[in-house]
Image 1 (tube, helix red, strand yellow):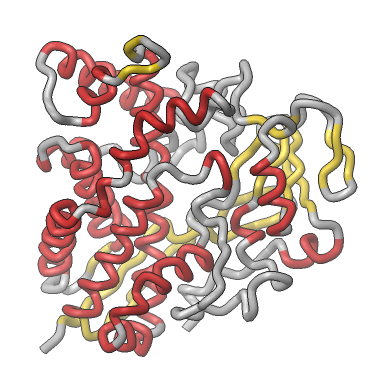
Image 2: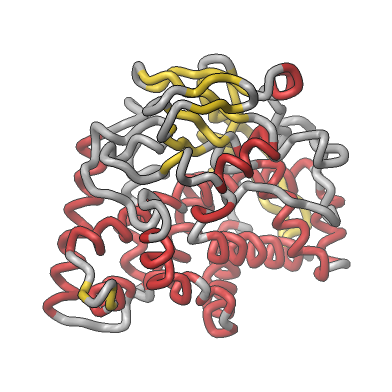
Length: 387
């Protein structure tokens, strides 16, 4: 019972120094590892910036070489960040609506019903990727059938099996979004593209490039993270069937379970910031124009904050995790991601008796000083439906 376990490679460095070090394409990065430091730096946007002239640099690995479109509002700092975010916040809160939740439930229930009858299921490609792609049609308010195109892109829109930064693959996404924006300009509807094109921003309409920036973030930001979360969740319930049974008996704690699984698995390891001026992080010098990373995965295992941090406590009462980021740039799609996990767990607890892991291949991130398991490249399981 250890395939679902995600160890904490940051523990020793977090305790001893509070920081770690890695190199990203020749660009050194200081990694903040303690929860208090991660939260503090995330809030101090004037010192640790998301915007700036170097588009794509705050992502790790940096995407400077594969895109020149600013992801909005992700790569914009306050106060402009807040103005952009105000345009889209209500749209991204739609997963709280009953009709949205009912549609998502039907999607996930249909998917689970189908794979529960199969002798073997590869969770990444046959469950997590279709689930994420089909749910995205709800978020964008576009036809369900469009998800088949996105499923064909694989688990990441900027990466392939051969390379962690694939410019050709990224171009597929950019060309696709350009075509969809042109389609919405010609025939406006009630989809997200049309809503953005019709939005008022600082007394004007958004430019096509701004709309594209929002859409790139929407497609890229929640793809592999949701897939990691779903796949890790399946592995966890396979090795802890008693937890699935408990959630069936106590559905009122499913919301807490979602938060705890997000904390424990931390589907996104970290996110970068650019240092605006000479300063210090954890008493270590940080030069202007250097990079730091806010290591969510390390912060979420900080024993000074979380009791039994390396265990999944489904009904954890105090859980100030940062799996969805923190402060100004807290994940825009967090409501959608939470609803996906909540619905998935609900359906699994109602329909699945046990899950058996048949085979797996771990996805290990190489962060120089650290090697972190983020999930699985493949996970073959067999579902046993309720009698």
